[in-house]
Image 1: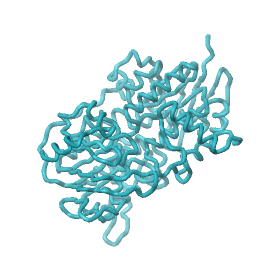
Image 2: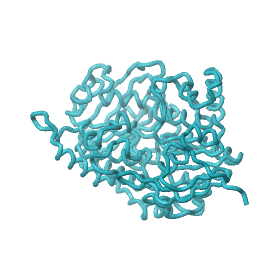
Image 3: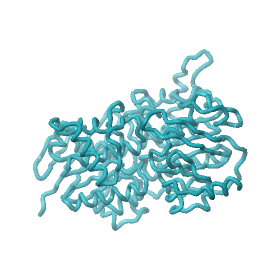
Image 4: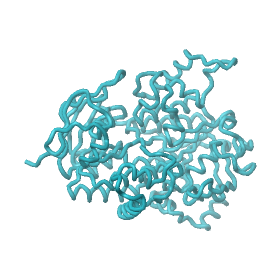
Length: 508
C-alpha cells in the first residue's frame, strides 16, 4: 500500500461562536487531486489553514508522508513541502510582485533571481504577470495569479488551492488545469476547494464533503453530476432562476465618451467609453481581468472624479465630478470586488459596517441608533443566510462567501435605483450564488438599473439582458443576451470586435 501524502484524523477546531471543524478525517494520496466541497461556512478554509500551520487544531492528528507532524506556522509547512493559495490574498500592497514572492522564499536568493524565476514560471504556465509592478496596481485576478505563481515556485509536494479560479477567465482556467494535471502526474498532491462543480468533476478524482464542520460524504466526483454534488453539499439542488423578459424603462446611467488617462504606469487608459443602463434591466460587462474594469468602476462609483463634465450622468444629472456620497444620494449603490478593505472594514462589526453606505440608523442629531442598526444587520444576516456569530461579529471573522453575501445584501436592502456590482458571486457556494443572482433579478424586476462586472461568463449569460465586453480600456458595442454566444464574447474579450460592428450597433 502506498503511504498517504496527508492523513488527518479527528480534527476539531472550535471558536467562541462556532465549531468550525468537528471530528474531521481526510486522506490524500500522492498524485491525487482531492476536492473539499461544502457551502460557505462549512469549515473548509479552517481545515486548510490547520494543514498549512496558520491555525492550531484543538484536537486530532496530522500525518504527512506517514509521519505525525505538528505544524506550528506556515514556514514549517513550506519546509515540509506544503504550499497554499489563499482565497483572501496575503500580499503587501506597497511591495512589488517580486518582493512579495521573495518574502516566502530562501533568504539567500537575490531579488533579481526571484524576478527571473517569476517571469519564467509565469511564462511556463500561462499566468503572465509583471514582477516589477506594485501589488496595489493589480486587479483581483492578477493578484490571484501572483499567489498561484508564488506557490508553484516552492515546488510543493502538497498544494492547497482555496477558490483558485474564482476570478480567472475560462481561458486562464484551462491553462491552470493543464498545470495542475501536470503537477499531479509528477506526484504532487492537490487539495482543491471550489464552488464550481463542473471544475471539480473535471479535475478531481476524490472528494470529501463538509457540512456544518463535519464530514458528510466521500465520493469520486467524476462519477457524480452537478445536481448530485449539490445535494451532497447543501442537501438540495439550488433553485432555478426565473429570468423573464421585461421592458426596460428610462435611462438611469449614461456614460458618453469617457476617456481617462491611467493614474499610474501600471493602470489602463480608458478610451471613449459609451455605456447606458436603463431602469429594469441588468447589463453585464465581461472581460479578462486587468483590461480597465478597475478604472471604469472607480469612475462610475465616484472614487475617481477626473472625468470631464457630462461624461457620466445619473438620471440625466451630471455626476462626473460627484464624490461617492453625492452619487449615493442620487440612488447609486456599489459592491466592489475587494470584500475586505473596500467592501468592509475588517475589524468593525457587521452592524457598524452597514454605516459605510447606509445612514438610515443615524438620527437627525447625528447619533447612531444602535438598536436599530443591530436589528438591520440581523435582518440582512437572516435574509441572506449569512453564517456569522451575530451582528457584532467582526467582518474579518466571516468566510469569504458569507462576507460577500452580507455586503451584497447590505446594498440590495438599501433599495438602490442604480446598483453596480463587481464579481457578485466571487467565492460563494452554488446555493448562495443562486440566491444572490435571484436577488439581483428581483431588484431588476422592481425597476432598478443594474450593472454587473464579472469574469464568469456563465453568470453574465444567466442574469444579463444586455452584454458589453471591455478589452484594453475600450468597450465593445452592446449585444442582447439572446443574440450573444460564448465564442463571440470570448473573441471580443481579445478586443476583436470590428469598427463596422460598432457603427452598426451605434445606428441601431
